[in-house]
Amino acid sequence: MTAALRRAPSAFRLGLKDGAPFILVIIPFATLFGVVSREAGLDAFEALAFSVAVIAGAAQFTALQLLNEQAPLLIVLATALAVNLRMAMYSASLTPHLGAAPVWKRALVAYFLVDQVYACSAVRFEENPHWRLDQKLAYFFGAVLPVCPLWYVFTVVGALVGAAIPGWMALDFAVPITFLALIAPMLRTLAHLAAALTSIVLALALAFLPYNLGLLLAAVAAMMVGARVELMMRSEA
View: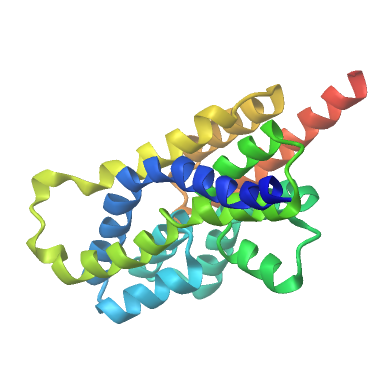
């Protein structure tokens, strides 16, 4: 019994350890969002409210850019939704592991299901199929701790001190690095590669469309291609 009780804290510490390296990109990424928010006319409280309500960096940057371009609200919402559709796939992937949790815990999982936490959890849950539900939840929230609170804190920091940050620091380097670090290890099947290639090619080919509509169309097409390739692979197996 004592050994069993130690497993959940141990899983929490492992999640904390796995999530910690993302601090190196979360800090500049969140700071950059705070800076961009301030440049777009939001104050520190509004920038923080944006991060707390959405807590999805890519969608936040996309929505803010479209709002700056005076895009129609429907386009802003549709594009941000398309960027965040990956969250639905994340949820479906983790449901077999965490779906038996109480409703309030599932609600917290859904809220904190960001890219970095999903990437860590998906790998560890696959490596440890013997983990109980409490261990998986402990791991998940351990991975959340180094990521989400810092996203809030440094959004405010960026909004408050953004004007004082010199241009040579180029904080925007954090955006591509974050997503490369997340995506690269997950390209493990032909379906993943097909979806990634489709999104890249179409996003570049349709870059001329207004309001980032090319990104919206590329995301939808990539999911369709990935799903189609996955079905073909399963039918041939």
